[in-house]
Image (cartoon, rainbow, N blue to C red; front, side, top):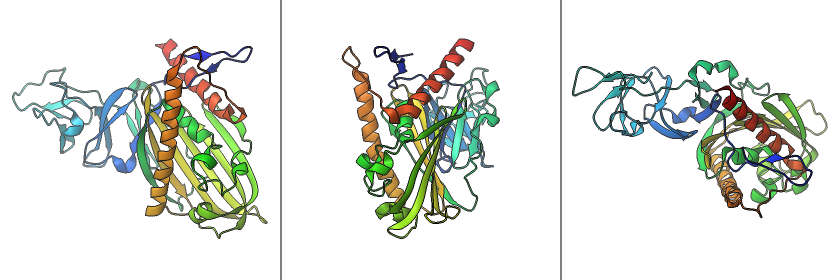
Amino acid sequence: MNETSRGEQPRVLLAQNLTYPRNQWYVAAGRSEVSRQPLGRKLLGKCVVLYRTEAGEAVAMDDWCPHRGFRLSRSELVGDTIQCGYHGMRFGPKGNCVHIPSQDTIPAKMGVTAYPVAERGHLVWIWLGDPAKADPALLPAELEFEDPSYFSGFVGARTAGCNAAVGLENVIDITHASLLHPGVLDGNNWELMTARDEVETLQPTVIQTTKHFGKMKVTGELAERNALPQNAEVSRIRVARQYLPGLHTSCETYYDAEDESKVLARRIRYVASTPQDDRSCWLFVAYSGTTQYGPVGLQKVMETLAQDLAALESTQAYFDQGGKSFKEVSVRADGAALLARRIIAKLAAQESTSE
């Protein structure tokens, strides 16, 4: 594991190629992405294919036919099986080969590895480690600020040319928002975004940060997105949780400035960061809240994400330079992100020593 020391300061793990543990649940797709059309994804270095059975159950398995290596994600479904588009071998939801057109007997080795999957909210999760350890109880618990009456949905998925830890840190620390996304989150007030977060460790792998914006006026896009009047006086609080190694949730609540028991608006964002490999990751975005994302709102979210992607890839390129002159200087606002790095590294190290 890469570490660095700076004089007498504690050693800090670098995020440029942080190793991730395999015996964990990771987001593989948005729920709406998995359908009767095979979907190929690279996750933790493995190429997998996802699809749904006729009963609607999600399936995940290796994305290579063991015969000649044709991609199953480029193939088609026949009932609940996936039929290789090259020579017609069919594989069931458990990865077992059930049909070879050219012969009746099926060799024992003619099968692919299937992976445990689970669905929570608008996300599909996969377990790429030891299947005996794939306990759904290890999935992030339902969050107490969710409400079944809220509008919710899956926004989209994008790849980022950076380590998954770099992608996760982008959403942990939002002090960048006024510069990368002016007016979108800050209400045209940069100082609000740099208010200090309170950082707590709720569980060994769950970090919570709380930002009290205090009383403020909401303007521009911030007011529009939350269906609030322009220049409305509110009291704003942001509570974010990192369910490590890969899920970030943030809940922004806007209370009446004179009566903080009255909720005027609430918006919850889910961002999952899943490694493709050491230098790239998938970012999945979903939402829940008191207002619906319309087409314009969804487009704005993806435009904002594109701005983040450019910054993340720049960060990775800087990290990759290495050499004696390389340095990473952290500031107070990085506390939660650095803690997340250490927890992810610890999970990976514990897994490595137990093998």
